[in-house]
Length: 252
Length: 252
DNA sequence: TTGAGTTATAGACCGTCGGTCGGTATAATA
DNA sequence: TATTATACCGACCGACGGTCTATAACTCAA
Image 1 (cartoon, rainbow over the protein chains, first blue to last red):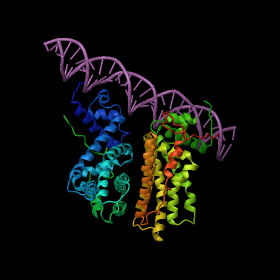
Image 2 (cartoon, rainbow over the protein chains, first blue to last red):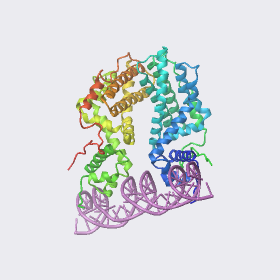
Image 3 (cartoon, rainbow over the protein chains, first blue to last red):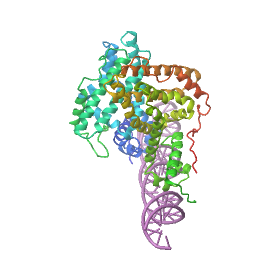
Image 4 (spheres, each protein chain N blue to C red):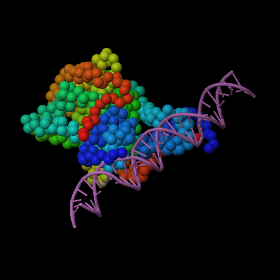
């Protein structure tokens, strides 16, 4: 085979790109290393020059995800006009409302990430993301406590709860998508709407705020998400083995 | 090899016993089928007579775990003298306080279950357990709402939160054990104690109860757990590949 | 310009894995 | 006893993640 040499940074990113596409499409376990290197057009030797193991590839991928997620909320973190409550609300809202219009792909990705075969992948990403977000949330809450907005004796604990709620929401959303008929869907939507309200109030009370202070999404936003996705033909009860997603960009 | 025939129920349980021991010791992925059948003293053919795949074995194991967990709280569920708050508190307490004295093994098991290589195994067990416990919690909360003890508009959501908190507690406990020095340990214990208090208050407020109604464990119980475990020589910074645990009983 | 040293690539090869298969010994049934 | 169903055996298979040796392509000092 002709020997093709690329800049190491490019190669590495390419490997991550194709690994991401394959891991998401088939799951970490079922996507073989040979699949990955074949997709990336690279030999075994080259792969192991960049990554110590398949596991290390997964780890690197998770870190890249977490980095991207953090970059996505950087504007909110840097905004000097936001008070702690505003910043917290903005963060919570960002991870949902915004994505409806701006990034239909993002939803497909999340749904994919919640499929059973992606458990390991998801866990790694979540771990890496938590490590990034936890100190940020803690700092926001601590500031809120200092200026008297929030009341709690355990900012770290509250930060954990916030992240738990965030994940749990995505979890129930994902489960709702799994449901079949439109009637099911309607029930699921109502349950979800209720759940979001519950999380809002729970956070209010945990932080010692009056009910209604925390806003995760406007009433009706869940329905907006679901119907938006419903009309998207790309993701349905697709039975194709390789669900089209995360199209690896070609970098030449 | 001589052909040994046992009653199918016995054989199946034996396979589950040895699989449990090996999965917990090495992790689901790293414990090979050959390991399992060697430990169980059974041929490949025999194994596939009982389980369709390694995956199916995992599933069956998770179900058995969940069944046992449910059996462990049956007395509380059947007690007619408990009101909803009492029953909820009893359930929360059962999953911790009791285990300190009665079942030192139970803690070792939980710690093992939280190790990274047991992610898949843990997830399955958790899934199965949730399926069993969710409706029970929902029913308790619903009764509490009816008789005016609790106030919430989403019993299912609250039930989920309760289970989340339960898991999160175990999670932080497990992480605390991972820490090294006794000084670290002391910091971890305090953080944990605070966390438990937070979860209690959070549940109080979510359920519309006065602060202090929900009791997950007495103040100081975390320290009791940790020191109890500390003095147990079986589990330390053990470097042995096969951590001794879940000794497969021999059924002849 | 060359050649020594380093880095990036290639691909044959290896042990182990989960799983299959044809067959056999025992138990149940008639 | 003959027949069928069940429990069991172990050689075998393709695919997997990972290792190894070789070498092409770059780097840079002399």
